[in-house]
Image (cartoon, rainbow, N blue to C red; front, side):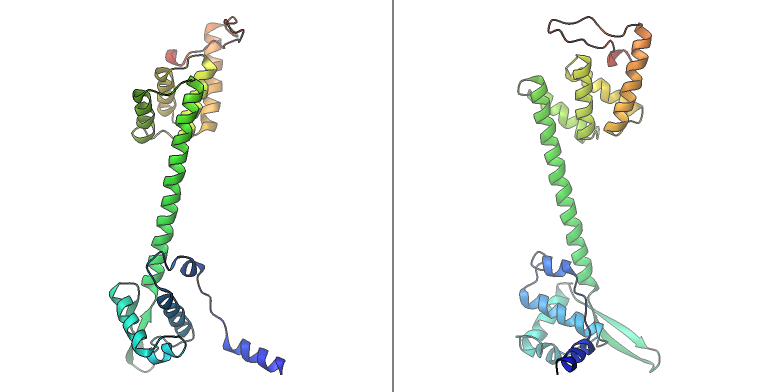
Length: 237
């Protein structure tokens, strides 16, 4: 008995429902009934019935055929459900069919918007991290002009937060912690096509070697804090 039931189960087949539909149908403005209607339409289409009647659909739902008809009209009017016309070349006739392509397009757009939102949030987090790191290194709150300079670097000069922090690190390493010096470092990197912290690190190492060779010194004398500072200056590049 169970074997016969299993065979019947398998004979019914299966259909794949996109997770994006289940996860985001409310986000794109569908009600529970409308989502179920799309699922039933998808099942009918996958089984070869491209234009199920409202009666056929309502038999699988808790909605009447009139309610299904109203939902179909609404979904088509909202541009979420489409109607196509196809030709049966063997019979030489045309027939109408529902298409779920507008729904898939809407879900894809929703996914793109979600990714864009994540990028915006990530960018804001990175920018906030830049402000915090600068204030930590400078040991004080940044002035309005300094905050505006950071925004210009990111928004107008299109310097990445990671690269700006690398320039901050270079300025600390050089013992010249000021915005003019950091701006010069970023200028040099941009002029030389440096776009990543890794490339900046490699370029900085080569730059320091050239500076040391030019001065013929390995390091500066100890400063008041007893810390040795290397002899190089981005303002003299």
